[in-house]
Image (tube, rainbow, N blue to C red; front, side, top):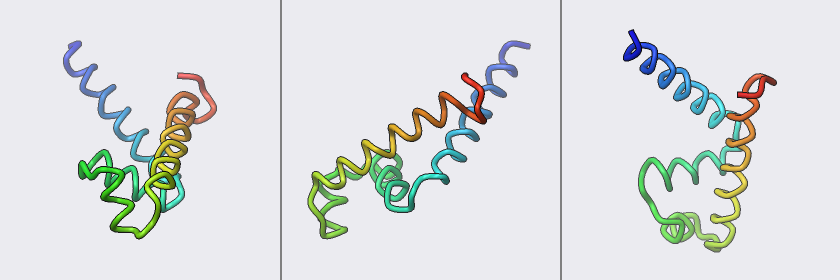
Length: 79
């Protein structure tokens, strides 16, 4: 049935995203997790870490770019 196929595809995408997240440098992973999963602002992340907000923004941007590439070329196959 189409419903189950859609669920399976969504589950596979979540698994691929999680695997790609784990490949990121720890700092990028931590900042993306805090921003997107915990809903923390970039300014709050910067305050907690004691760093400049621009560095947090750059780190998140670079991590997201890496994730896009990883998800687009998952296992060397264009998706």
